Image 1: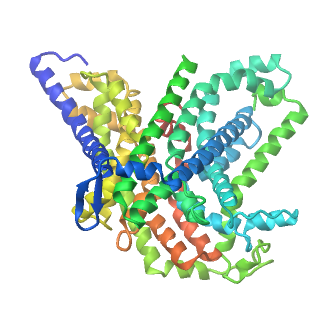
Image 2: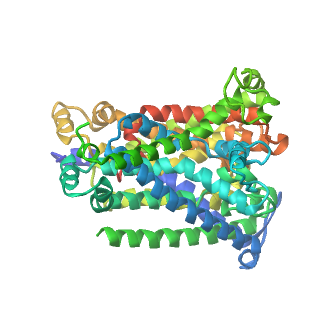
Image 3: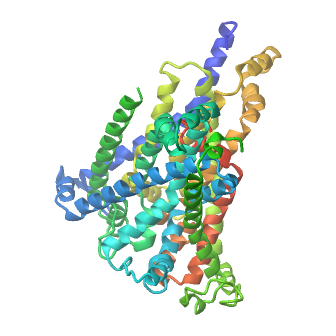
Length: 294
Length: 284
């Protein structure tokens, strides 16, 4: 819009800042303040009821870095995200492709495959207990039919595997929807032309669908990675972090340290360290992704 | 069905595609069906997992539903969830939509794209990092275990999302329409309120549903900051899991109640979800 005169320009300027201002102030107040505040706590000794008693330098960071529980939670988180996200991306893309190929009844399949998207993570973990427990859980009962017994709930490995399976169930639809939109935006003529040359639609998938949908797919991977590193509710409701501490992802471990043991100093230090690691991972990934697309 | 991908596929290829679709559908539906079947069983009946056909294998009953729905704590948490999610959605739209419009329409000292990217970067931070400061802040403001405390927090986490996605949607509104209104004498606020917003209603509804779902499902802060009065469904489920263990029938009812509202809402807007969830990276 071209402002006609000075008065109009002034009112436009007032308008645009008045509209933008509240949101910017809100975000600054409620994200910058807590991060600086967390930094402050991470260098201090906090006693419940008395507040910060004194500053202890890097003591909390030292305590965090020498805590085996901290490193274990990082390992568990990396395994969780490292397995779940690639599986979700592959399955989501595969499902999107079979819908794009246009099998009869694709509308129904599309709705069904999207259904888990907004399910509550805690509820899925909670329902997961009844799916995976060896006492009459559906998965255990089904596996018993083929004489397979997996100790899902009584071992750390089993619990982690069960949580990852549920995570895949819940989040594959996210990749599915994005891949579907990407594949759907490719004109039919391109598919048709490719299909006339190819021997099957799998070749069209490899040489047309995948390369053209790849930019969108990388965005999906990035977003899944960001959300995956925050995972809390699903594994916590499924295993409560146990047996022992074996399935404590970072968010669960850090939550327990701060909310159950009220160790605010060490909890904050761990949080800051995690924030740094997550930012590095996401930034590196983002750069790589940009390079590939350009 | 004049898609060559399908019509020119060989028979074997079609069988493979169909098999994948059917297996995928079973995989997705199985947990839902399991929950539904168990919700109509008595606790004793849930011990025989193989009994899945109502009337034939077991006698369906509404006992579990009655048990859950007559528990004041579960009703209270259902209400808390609804109020917190609705309150958050409203606050986020009121704060975020004007900001998004401003970024979509006007020039700033910094590029509007960079400001949008800054909003987006807020999303990377894992919420647990700021658990301590928010916990202490809530104690100081006396907002522990209150709806307002949760609404305040959830709005913070969802505001960035709303700004980024609504900016993208407002950019699609034709400038010519707004220009015409301006010549007719409408002021900037009227253009926003009476033209841009109604024309972006689809996008606004999708944004609202996604924000509602995020708030409805949030567990970390709900669990840390609420216990009784303002306990939302995730906190209710987590605490009853640790105090009462897991009864299959009650777990099934609770699961259905907890997941139904956002899932049902999302069915109405499936077509637009990809765009919203990808922060506008996908034009669905």
